[in-house]
Amino acid sequence: MLKVAVFDGGYGGEFLADRIKEELPVLEVIRIIDWRNANDLLTSPKKARKIAEAALRPYLGRVDLIIFANYLLTITSLKYFEKKYKNQRFLGLSLERPSTFIKRDILILTTKAVTKTLGYHNFILGLRRKTKTLALDAWPEKIDDGILTEQEIKETLRSFSLKENIEPEEIILACSQFYDIEPNLKKLYGRNLRIYDDFDNTIRKTCKILNIRGGLGKKTN
Image 1: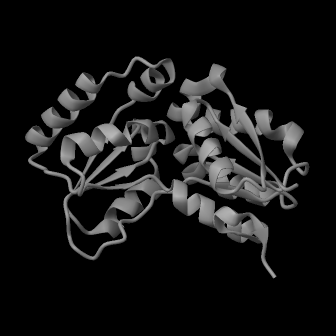
Image 2 (image 1 turned 180 degrees about the vertical axis):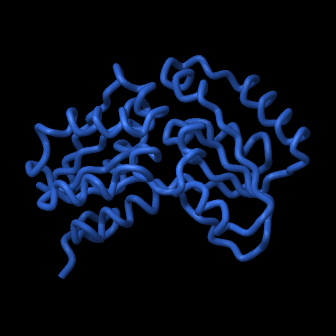
């Protein structure tokens, strides 16, 4: 059985691992969740790389694919890991571009460290739309602890939308924990809201890398 390791510092990794296991039951999914270093994995690229490298050392060369369920690691360190560990395949959640051609207002929910990266800056420039970023550094920990309330989500986003004069029709999630609040976002902005979290795209890339066929989990010919 093919082995895939999912690395993260919180429930974002659990959410992604659950999705992969659901869509690709042929895979053995190994969860490497470093709860103790969750904050550093979200706020410091240098520390995040060091923490990830230490946590992944026992799995390097022993699994078929390692997936970072962490946007900061993907943006700042994926190429580093690919270059240093050439015999190990890596993949990471990445910033997903809207699939529509209509120029809708876009809101990006992420963390401050991600917004400071060159990769994020280039991503924003490439969108060429009215785009606003909301950094929510306190929310990942609250989601992990199960204390982020619907009321806080509603009040924070409504206040931001009014302040920035934006009525988002598309939301890009650039923190894997935020996958947990997608139902709240739909409730707040309506069912026509488009949400991009890169989970489905990561599953498709996993299939391509490991040469398996979609959710059927069958080897391709």
